[in-house]
Length: 233
Ligand code: ZN
View 1 (cartoon, helix red, strand yellow):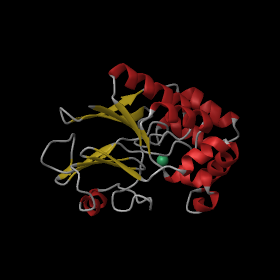
View 2 (tube, rainbow, N blue to C red):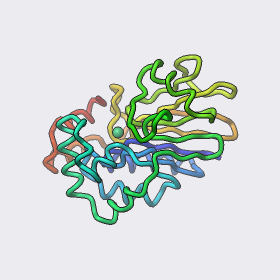
View 3 (cartoon, protein in one colour):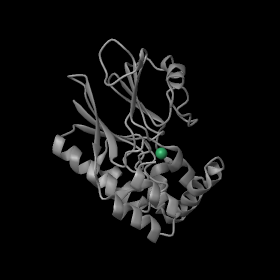
C-alpha cells in the first residue's frame, strides 16, 4: 500500500493543489493529513473542503484547534494570533464543526500518525532535536511514527538522524509542511510511504508561491506571513 502523508497546509491552496496533483501522478492508496489545515494562509475554507474530499484520515493540529477556540492561541506569536482570529471569522460553520471532531492520532497497520509528538499528541510539543526524538521513542510501539508540526522534514532514528527508514529500527518521520516550509527551502514538502517495500520518500516541489503570498497580502493578513513563504522560513 502506498500512503501519501501531508501536513501543515496552513490555508495555502496553491501548495495543497500542487501537492495533490503530484500525489495523483504518483498514485496513492490513501492520503493522510496530519493537521494544521488552516492558520497563516488566506484560503482556509477551500483547503478544509479539499482535504475533506481527498483524504482518508485527518488529524487535528494546534492551529486548527486555535481557529476553533481562539483563547487557546495565547502562546502563539503575534502574527500567528492575528491569523488565528482572521481564520476564526472566515471559517464556515460546517467546516468548524468538522474540525471539532478530528482526533489527535491515528494508526494504519504498523504505522502511527500524530500532529505533534507521540509523547502527548494533544499537548503540541515539538520534536526538533535528537534529544526531543529520544524522549519520544518509548511512547509508541510501532516501527514508524509520522509527525508534522515543526514544518521541517526530517527522519529521526533510535540510532540518530537518518536519510531513510529501514526495518528493524524505530523511526520518527517528519514529513515537513505543504503550506509553510521552514527549512530554508520554499518548496512544498510531503511524504510518500510504501508499506510493502518499506520505503519512505520526502517529496519537495515548486508551486505557485507568488499567488499564495499575494492572497495573504490581499486578505489583510500580516505581510510577514506572505514574505516567509518566499524564503521558506
Ligand atoms: Zn503547523
